[in-house]
Length: 52
Image 1 (cartoon, rainbow, N blue to C red):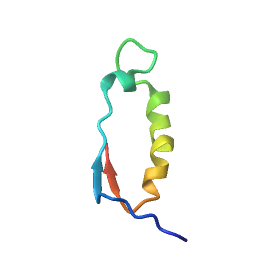
Image 2: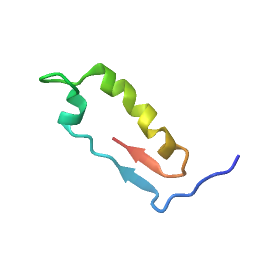
Image 3: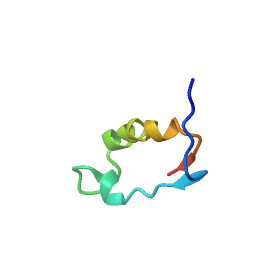
Image 4: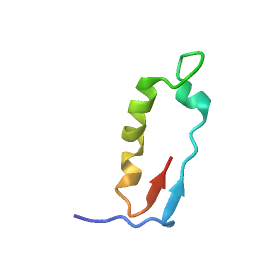
């Protein structure tokens, strides 16, 4: 297994409320919150730690 090394050791990702809202008028859309891990998976392959 080949490891990819990141430039930074830690990354903090800020996700806006509007992004989590999806098509709804308020609150967090469950489909959007389920999609986040899939979108972040490539960054998890690096040695970099990430937080939301």
